Image (cartoon, rainbow, N blue to C red):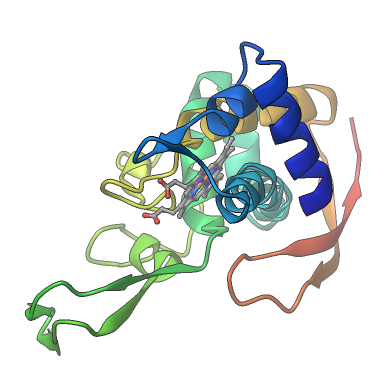
Amino acid sequence: MFAYGRDILKKRRAEPREDLLTAIANAKLDGELLADEYLDGSWLLIVFAGNDTTRNTLSGAMRLLTEFPDQRAKLASQPDLMANAANEFIRMVSPVIYMRRTATRDTEIADQAIAEGEKVLMYYGAANRDPAMFDNPDALNVERANSDKHIAFGYGPHVCVGKRVAQIQLEEAYRQILGRYPKATWTGDIDIAPNNFVHAISRLGLRLVG
Ligand code: HEM
């Protein structure tokens, strides 16, 4: 995949198009085109960041809709709730498990001292199920008033570039799936890959019931 990515990005240098890969291939850092390892990193982000996250949220949502049938019924009868529901699914699945930061100065968070230079892991799922922020956090609530206050996309200067794309894609995918199979039901079968960075559902059984 790296070889394939480099090949495409180099082709975009030779023959630019109106697309995102052309923008990455021709981006300059301190006046220089990106070195190969940065091309690999950017390719990895595009392939992996925008793929594993969205599809795991999608399969996770199918499981949640089976576990909370009253919410599925509500969504089926009130399709206007879809955008809010899409955020609620992302909140509950939180497909990216953590990112790490390095403290630039001494600070304190919730009585925990953090020294300059220390590495801090930010567990998105923990924040997104914080009872101080979300009422009854382990329950799916497609009408949750603050479902958009989750931080599954991160926060600050590195906030997910694909945030809006993911929300639009997921909202439309649920609309299409539930439009055709309003009673799609998780069979109870699930394989979760051993991965500590992304909540990776490698297989999820679904009965497609109309
Ligand atoms: C439900 C779907 C998604 C979730 C939960 C998600 C989550 C995240 C998180 C947690 C970060 C790191 C933020 C940080 O370090 O502060 C991130 C970064 C990023 N995401 Fe997403 N993402 C999703 C979909 C996408 C899609 C669809 C794309 C591209 C089309 C994408 C592209 C990126 C890129 C390029 C970055 C790096 C941004 C940077 O470091 O400046 N993501 N995402």
